[in-house]
Amino acid sequence: MDREAFLDELVRRALDLQSVLIAGPRRIGKTVLASEALRRLREEHGALTAEVDLFYCATAREFAAKLALACLGSRDGRLRRALAGTERALAQLAADTEIVARLPGLELHWLRHPERVPDEEMLDRALSLPERMAEAAGRPFVLLLDEFEEIERLGGDMLLKRMRAIFQRQRRTAYFFLGSRPSTLRALFGRQRQAFFRFADPLTVPPIPVEAWKEYATRKLAAQGIRLLPAAADFILDKTGGHPWGTSRAFSAAYHAAVAERSDVLDLDLAAAAFERMMDDLTDVFVQELQELDDIPHARVVLHRLARGERPYAGTRVHPQQVRRALQALVDRCILRRDGRGEYAFEEPLLREHLIRAGG
Ligand SMILES: Nc1ncnc2c1ncn2[C@@H]1O[C@H](COP(=O)(O)OP(=O)(O)OP(=O)(O)O)[C@@H](O)[C@H]1O
Ligand SMILES: [Mg+2]
Image 1 (cartoon, helix red, strand yellow):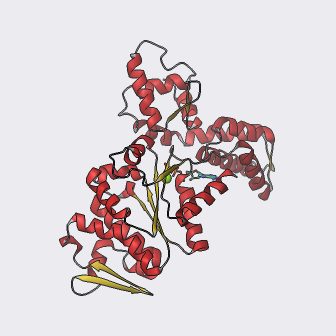
Image 2: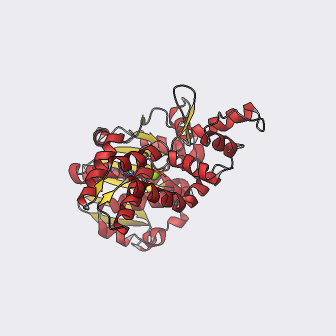
Image 3: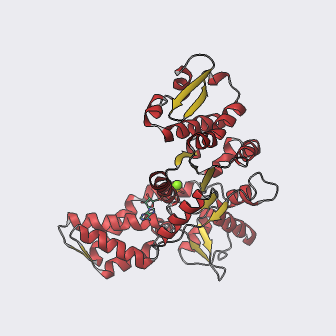
């Protein structure tokens, strides 16, 4: 699969200490791929690794604490358990003003009273930790920062400048920055004046080719004693467009339908029935996804038009200028993609399926 080559590239770049930015649509497998690259870096190349999902950090301070814990945990499971209570546990670990954790070849200092330390210092300490650990261990450190666009919410320019100042001095640490708002991320990384200018190379997650999906699903089902008929595979792939999340859900739903029917053949009827049930089950997912777009004026009208196969500018209810803005925002959020002919396609074909079913 193309994805193997992509994984190889992630591993190679990390070992070269070249940071990368992976910005792409929701649920295409960014996190799965980056985590797998981390596992290989850890197990096959002896790298130290850690990951932090910024989505789950309420404040810059919490980000600092989570980052520190993730880094320390990368080294030693026991230490991770000892630190499991986050800041309070950190504070209780040792006497005096600093905690000293002694690990083979490495002495780590952490604060005994983190609550007395200003946010900036907490951040600087946490952000410096990967490099210090890498130096002490004589091994590279690879840090995965997931949902990185959340950095704006956590601290905006101040935080970015701090990060950049620390990161650019580092010689043994590589970063995987992940996110699903390419426009925001590109702005963070791409613009001349921005703090992250040229810090990380953008990489695109390759699609999983239809043929690869067929081969994979046929093999997986055969291992369970079920023969996947080409018509059923074509039906599913036509509906999902090979999108990683939707396709794996659809094949899994079809598999379970075959098991429930005690059938050792997965045919078109079974696949189609399972697909309908799956779409019902996924209603909540898509309803929520659409709610998240409610800050884009006219987004729903435009999406419904596109789902019905109409031109986005058709109809008189919304001014063309407003349609244009909505389309742009939907592309920025990776809901839509502009294809070569200036037409718009859904990044996730199942969202279109949902809109068709929901009507409106
Ligand atoms: N190579 C793959 N083969 C099969 N299924 C996959 C593959 N990659 C991803 N998936 C499926 O897609 C789902 C979403 O993947 P993942 O969480 O990595 O996406 P993401 O791009 O990080 O999404 P988000 O932007 O929402 O964080 C996974 O739970 C998995 O079911
Ligand atoms: Mg993810």
